[in-house]
Length: 295
Image (cartoon, rainbow, N blue to C red; front, side, top):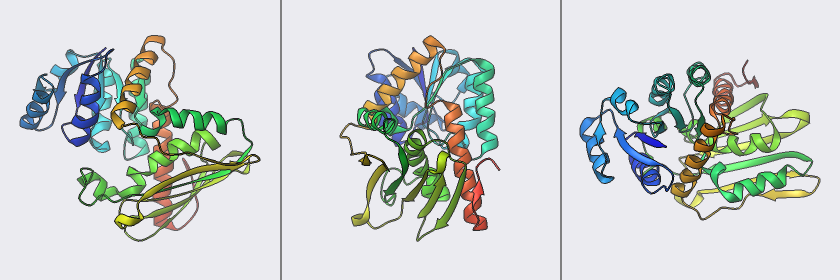
């Protein structure tokens, strides 16, 4: 499968393009960027053309791997799907349910495959954890994901504007939702900096909590993920694999979905459902009330 990468930043070159350039079953054929000079420079790293002409790149590829801010990604994903290209999207797929709905509709109309790159979902440890969780009568769970953007390559304008809820929140939801079921309601509260605390309602009385931040002190950073039930607490331990390795798995799974025509657990519809929860959480932060997801 011939891929183009959309994006020229750190994540685009260090993960998406690096993964595709070394992938035995995929071919990186070009890089697109809004800044032609940056696109050419990014392409030169991998000995492929760099361009600011999206239509020209789409004409040469079977699939597109996105590494763009979500508000830029969503309309370009619509264009790529309409052109018949399979989509490997970043999270969140958009910054509003309305925009995410349009991407879902474009994918469905075109009949193309889609995968959203929730990094941890493409790691063996996570797959094993979710399989174990499926065999337990669960009551709830929790994710605490504390980081610090300052001075990192991820200190980008969209993350600074929208905060950890939209940047880190999708990671938490991508783990809790498959374990505990879809979220029907959310209560959100703000902490210091961009810290957000969530209480999520899942089916059959299950509930979970999420705390995310990208502004904690350096010594406070860390990730804790667990669910609990009749067999005790099941903790997801960190895995040493890199994001490049996870992306390569996502490429494999997108190609399989394209070949079989089947839905992927992390397809654009799931990505849209995550945006629904994030949007409800944003409303809850503004109103101070428990908000219905999709309401």
